[in-house]
Image 1 (tube, chains in turn yellow, red):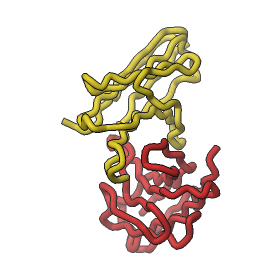
Image 2 (cartoon, chains in turn orange, red):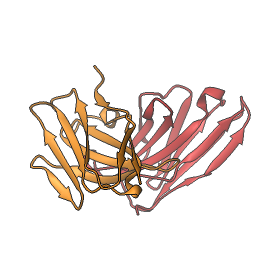
Image 3 (cartoon, rainbow over the protein chains, first blue to last red):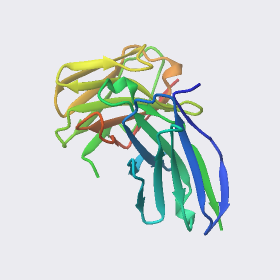
Image 4 (cartoon, rainbow over the protein chains, first blue to last red):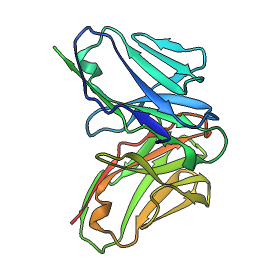
Length: 112
Length: 112
């Protein structure tokens, strides 16, 4: 099993739809989690951190399920501008930077 | 945006030539990272630094060396470039291992 796994997609949904995708991780000692957005030929940009209690930022909601070892990202009322690749990042606490794992990303395409 | 600059932004060179990529930050962050991103592989860590003159290997360090003589600069060197090192290279920084990383704009490197 990969240390961090994401469904590569692509997810192709109509504008205004709600879409969700997950990121599973194998290291139960993982401490910190983040979602990044990456546009084509651009650098990854931090979208949001994922807190144990779940957190929301506008149309975006991130959740952590430690028991099942996954994080999720929910996008409501999707916009054309949400089309991008979404990367999850899992950090296993204060061990080594070499243990920071980026998922390969989930491609999201929003159609008019 | 985090003060991080990569140079050059694009480079085309020939197999066997040395290449040095520069990452410069103005955030005084402790940690600096070099990643490469290729289709189908996502972001892979090459080397990272946890302080001046303190560096360590990542997942794909073969063929690469790094140096950090000042807090603000992290150099990635390909001693003798090969076509397999054609990729997009990203530098990232953070102040603590558990904090999200912030990325530079990337360097597109083509080895012919």
